[in-house]
Length: 422
Image 1 (tube, one colour):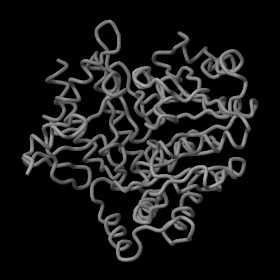
Image 2 (cartoon, one colour):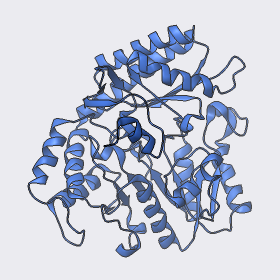
Image 3 (cartoon, one colour):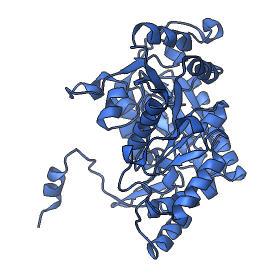
């Protein structure tokens, strides 16, 4: 029998020396009995935390019926998930494609739908975007380090600057810029594309890219540009969806109706693997055999999703996300005044990030990684941006977070900063 070290040597990628044992709510416990408040919601997908009893119960009950069924037939779990998603999404989104099994496959499907509907092919994404891990989505994500190892990438995609006001690509100030970051997209279309742009796919708040929150008016201006150019606007809400911003979808926070929303991660509540594409009538019509996956429309996952949606959609639940998020943002703004290394704090609801820089204001990825590592000793799990190459620490705990637990996060951060930043 293989010993533990041999098992570790056989895992394709490196893993932490810590071995986790169980999770409950917002907390994770290792085999030595240490408790961690998980500010990453595992992989930003545990919207209801670890082992939420209602989600576990729903999945156990589904186990007694059907575990899997081909999507050619109806089932109560899938019908229920479709109904709930339509009821809780922007009013123009009336179609749900549930036969996808990940954020990457949902994003890829939404792009295919846009290409089929418009008869065009190219796709615009943002510099720091992370729209998935398949080859097509890797090609369209930002960051050269993600694309460099692969000789054959999907052609026909353009990256444009993020609406990153703190480090504006165009060197502008928000008060006077006129949202140049949207205006210049027209130049990219005019001069850098083939003139056949089918879609813009954008994370309403960047996930891996550094928690960039677009300024007021950006989304409305982008929507208008897409309408003028006959381009489908797709919101990648893999991370921002299912209550993360204090609204069911970030599209509702920004008061914009995209042509499609993709959702995954938090839809499973406590870790069920589930995803879906929501579209308007315009993007309907892609034949089912053009984009379907065996483990999409999974009944166990749909049962978890239905319970999750019923919990998250409640006004009091979403109000608590906004309340706890505002508390953390307020405390971080106070810390920013006392710790010069913290140069920007940004977020909506419990989609929060804070940026770290060195004494001359340059992004400090080394310090960011150090703090993320040291945080474990203070009972916090934090994740960094751009796979450790970025300078933003992310705070995205499960949405069931209480005010007392939000205070606990901030108190632990204070302890961390007093030790590591003083």
